[in-house]
Each structure stands twice: as structure tokens, then as C-alpha cells.
Picture 1 (tube, helix red, strand yellow):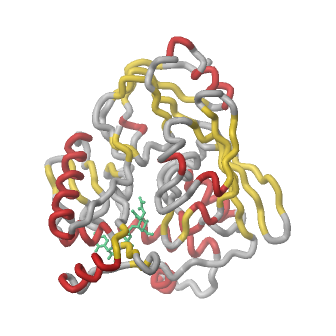
Picture 2 (picture 1 turned 180 degrees about the vertical axis):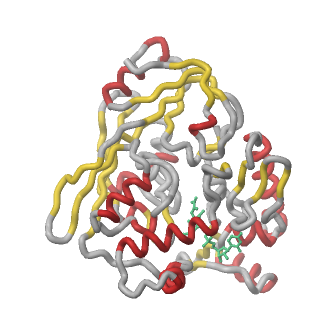
Length: 339
Ligand code: EPU
């Protein structure tokens, strides 16, 4: 039976670096350990929080329950042919370590997702994405423990209902499963996605003449390090809000008022606009309020300079939402889960 500790600080377990305690805390290294904890009658009625890398949560107070950190490790090759390799990874592997495993073994598909904080098990929850790639593009299936039946269930691509920062695990299946492992399809003949953002220019600046999985990964790492704060130095949770999707009519009206507004077409009727631009234009970029604030290089990232309070970040998020709503009539939805 894994050790259950009492009154533990969650500060090292959330990338915002917020101070909050858990009444009970444990780490599990195997599915058996996870089942043991869950079937212990002493904790049956206690609220539970399953934690990966803690990179997508905002702790707004102490957690009056049991925090279970999922440490299921292991990366293995399931099968392989001339074109592709099927890889299975434990949910507790650090996402970037899996990316580096693929880069080192010349397996293409997730190099654009380099340096995204968090664990493999958390990645499908919100279909992590960056620089034109989402995990749904390489996803095969995942295994998850049903918290009611204690049976392991398999979810294929369709069952996960992936969308932009969305999956079934944020809706119908929310709170009902713990993801145990994820299987991906990587390519031995990768197609490089270099049109998005500054990847092409960065590769040129880096003097790369021959494209490779490693070069794309290096470029993404370079861009992220130049724009996004390192959670080890400044607490943050990456993008705090999702980029909103609005109707084309609404967009045309905004465009006439703000000709510089950037946009990405989604379909005939819908346009996505970058929340970072809206927040910056509403005057928030680089604003600091005591120990918290809006990052100076990326307005979509809220930060804790050290010793900040989760409730102050929550209030700042509401204030940003109100001002963006007032100025553009757009409601921003948080990407981060409030606990
Ligand atoms: N922009 C501004 N001001 C800002 C930030 C952005 O004007 O302060 C503008 C940029 O100039 C650009 C546009 O907004 O025209 C988009 O900016 P960027 O390329 O930095 O990407 P993003 O839309 O802000 C999204 C993801 C990131 C991902 C990048 C790159 C969301 C919510 N965020 O950010 O994901 O790394 O694209 O693909 O979709 C995350 O989810 O935590 C995350 C970091």
C-alpha cells in the first residue's frame, strides 16, 4: 500500500508554484497501487484530485481531500514497420521526455510539441497542441481506469472526441476515469510542419539547411524559451485562456474597428482570434499586481512571481474576461482548471 502523508504542501506539484496544502497526499507507481488506494475504505468518501505535472491547474485554496500523483512510468515500442512505430507511454512520463525519446530515435510527429509542460496522461485531456500540431494527429488509443467499476477501458480516437483543447475527459467522462497510458503512432518518414508561427524564420536564423526532426524540435524549444516563462523560474500555467472562436459577422465588425486584428479561419462561418492579442490590446500585457501579473512577452500567460495567491490570479482572470468582453463582445474561456 503506498504511503499516504498528511497536510502536504502542493507548492512543488503545481507549475504556478502556488502555496496550498492537501489534507492527504500519495504517489502511485503502478495500476495495482492506484487500485489499492481507491479501494481503501478509509478514503472512500474523501474527495480526490489526480495529478500529473500540475501544469494546468489553479489552486485557489487548500485541498480538503486526497491528492494522488500519477507516477506510472515506462515508454515501450508496441510494433513497428518500415513506415511507422507504435509507442506506448505510461501516464506519469514527463511529456517532454517522451518528445525527446522520439527525437533521439528519429521518430516524427510530436517534435512541434516540444517543451509543453505536464505529463503524458494529462496530454489527451485537453488535446495539447502547438505550432500546427495536436496530439490527436498521432494518437492511437489510451487506457483509463474507470473509477466506478475499477475496470481498465480502452478509448480510441473517436471515443476521445478531441477538439481544440477539448476531449471527452473534460465533458461526459470528467472525473470518471484516470488515464493510465497512451499509445501514439510516430513516423519514420516525417512530414514537417514548419509554416506555423516563427518556425521557418527560427530555422533560418539557426542556420539549418537540412530539415530534421531534431532541428524542428530545437526551433520550437528556442521559440518557447524566448516567449514563454519557465515555470521553474516564474510560476505559470502556459496559456490561461483558449483562443476564442467567433462568427465571421462578428469578426468583420471587429476588423472594421481594429484592422490589425489577427485571425485564423476555422470554416465558412467561424474565425479564431488570438486571445493574447485581445488581452494585450485591452491593456493588460506586462501588468503586475503585487506577486502576480500578466506576462510581459505573452499576454495569454498569467504569472506568479513567487508567494502569489491563487484567488488573486482567479480575480485577475475575471477582470481580464470582463474587459475583453466589454471591448470586443468576446467571452474568453479559461484553459486552466480551477481547483
Ligand atoms: N499576440 C499578441 N500579444 C500577445 C500574445 C500574442 O498580439 O501578448 C498575437 C501574436 O502576435 C500572434 C497571435 O497573437 O499574432 C498568436 O500568438 P502565439 O503564436 O504566441 O500563439 P497563441 O495563440 O497565443 C497558441 C497556444 C499555445 C501554443 C501557441 C503556438 C492556445 C490557447 N495557446 O498560443 O499553447 O504554444 O499557440 O502554437 O491555443 C498552451 O496551451 O499552454 C500554449 C502555450
